[in-house]
Length: 80
Image (tube, rainbow, N blue to C red; front, side, top):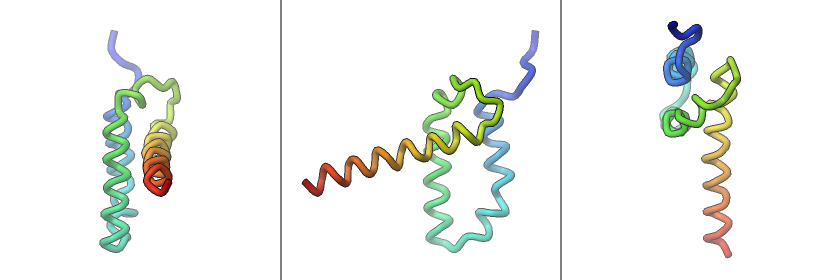
C-alpha cells in the first residue's frame, strides 16, 4: 500500500519552495541567515520524519530553534 502523505523531506522542501517569495524580498544579509536556517531544517530531516505532526512547519521551526539553542550554549560557554 502506498503512502497517504508525502515524506517529511518532500513536505519540508515544498514549504521551502513556498517561502521563495519571502526569501527574494530579503536583503543579502538576511537572505544568507535565512538560508542557514533552512540548512538546519535539512540537517534535522530524520528527526522531522519521526514527528507525528501533519504540518511539517512545526518540525521545521523546532529544527531552527534547536540550532539556535545550541549556538547560545556555545556562546555562553565561551564567555565563561
